[in-house]
Structure formats: structure tokens, C-alpha cells
Image (cartoon, rainbow, N blue to C red; front, side, top):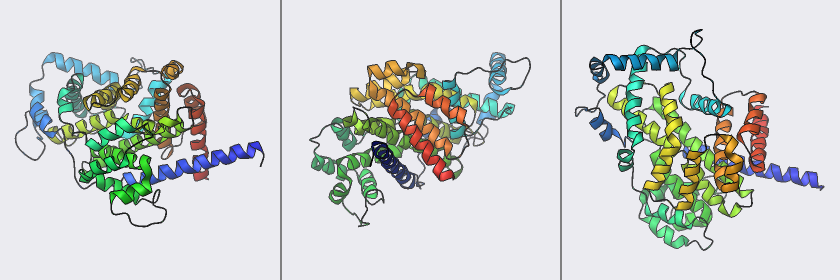
Length: 412
């Protein structure tokens, strides 16, 4: 076999592994949950001064409008013009960089396209909710205090991610004390991706034999983070599942990029950071759903105000959550850089300062495009711009090409 064929064979094997991993996670992790989680419901009941009822206060928004003064009405009109009116000669179009447009395009995919001209009622409703949440995000202590406690097993994993002498027996003992996490690990071990012999796994030690150290770690990480995914009504559930799929895809892609780099010993850490780097999106969406439940059920998540709020606050909130949970400095530094890097033009400097932070940034870009390609037709010029403008490393370019080749095969 000549060198060219060897390279092609190697790429095909990488592609097969990557596709199998992605297909497994799509099947395993996107199962609808039966229990709705409203972790911020009490918080919003207090903020909106809601009475003790189990239903939304359908008159809250209408009553709140009566107290709106003339200055607030003027501010709303200005906001309505800026975000909602398009194709008007007197209003200059919003000019975005490709980075900003790419982010906007993904949020349109994630939460649905924003209407070109929204009704005055929905604009005011969205503005009311976004203002309340923005105030929370400015000083997120109330949000952080509402989050679940970090399990001991996850704390142990974070401290041992790059340790070759990982004590699996100690971790298993911790997992045994956390039934929800243990169930997730055993379910992972029974998946078709890991359990090739289709022999049923019923206990953690057997699960470890199938999963290995990295698989066991991924099971604990996924088991905890999946608890943060919003599981509201069937109508809104699809959006939460997309956000969760984005997190999983970013983790898988980050792991693949780092595994092909000189930092391959840090692939497990890259997976973990990739998985949690979108926590801000998960939590902000949960805030929106809980606010809808309290204020008015007619509100939709596709408001431009909500998308802008996510784009502005998501990475910063992710960092605060990780810091609140006392994540290691090696993880906090990467997340802090994600929040600081606003433009892909800074990727060369980011790669020089901390390569793994650059890989995480690129993994997020790639996963966003990959998800959109499953439901949208994207022209070649746009994809070429993504490759040349939003990616920096050779590993990221190769990974994107593998995804595009695979997408063409599936479309044929």
C-alpha cells in the first residue's frame, strides 16, 4: 500500500470512528425525559411576584403594562424598530461580521427563525422577560444558588482527567452512592457503541470492564450535565434537545481535534470542557422556559432579544458556573478565554497562548455547522468562509472536511 492510500485509509478509519461516536450519542443521549425540571421556578415566582398557583399568571403581563410610563414606551418603540423592522428605506440594515452572522445563523437553527415583523404584544412580552433575565445575569448569584450540587464522583474525575494512575475503584465507590449517575453509567455500558457482545451489564464493576477509565469518566460527566438539560412541555422540548446535542457534539469534536494534536494526552479533558462550554446556553434556555411558565405561555423562544441575550451572556455565565462549582484552574482558564475571544481573528494568538482553548473554540464552530447540515442546505461559499475565517488549526480543517465528505455520502 502506497503512502497516499495509507493516508486515505487512516482518514477513513478516523471518519468511521467519529461517525460511530456521533451516531451513538444521538441515540443514547437524546431520549426524552419524563420529568420536567424547573430549577428556577421559585426564583421567578419571587421576581414576578406570582401567587401560589400551579398555572401561569395569564394577566401578569397585561397588568404590568398598566404601570409602564411614557419613557419605557419610548424605549420599547426604539427597540422594536432596531430589532423588528426590516426592508424599510429609512432604517439602515444591521451590518454584522461573519463571526456575528454565523452565531446568529446558528441561534436561528437552534431556536427558530425570528419573525421579520413581530406583533407589538409579543415584542413587549419578550422585552419584559429579557429585561428580568438580563438583570439576573448581570449579578448571577441567585442563578448559581439555584443550581444542583456537584456530585463527588464528578469532582473526583475533574481532578484525575489527565492522571495515568487513575484510581477507578475509588471512583466506582463514589458512583455507587449516586444512583442517578450510576444508572447513566450502566446504561452507557449497555449501549451498542461500547457493548459489542450485547451482554447485559447490571453493575458498575462490569460497566468499568466494558467502558474503561475514559468511558467511565464520560458516563459520569454526561450523567450529571444531562440533568441540566431543560425538559419542559413537548412543544419546547425540541429546543432543549438541540442545545444538549450541541454540547455533546462539541465535546466529541474537541476530543477528536486534541487526539490528533501533540496534546493528545489531554483528549479526555478536551471532551469534558467541550461538553460544558455550552452550559450558559442550557441555563439561559432553562431561565426562559421557567419565565414563560410564570409569566405567560404564549411567549416563544425565537425572539431576537432572547438570541442576543444568549450570544452576549452564555460564555460568561458558563465561566461563572464552573467557578461556582470549583472546577480546576486548568478548566477555568480555558472557559475564561472562550468568553474573552470575540472574533476568530484572534485564534492564532489564542493557539499560541493555550492550544486547547483554540481547539475548544474550533470544536464549537464545527459542531454548529455539522448540526445545521443535518437539516439545512448550506452553499459551498458559506462553508468555505467558515473554513478560512473561523478555523485556524490543521486538525480543525481536516475534521471539517471529514464531516463534509460524510455529509455528501449520506446525501447521495
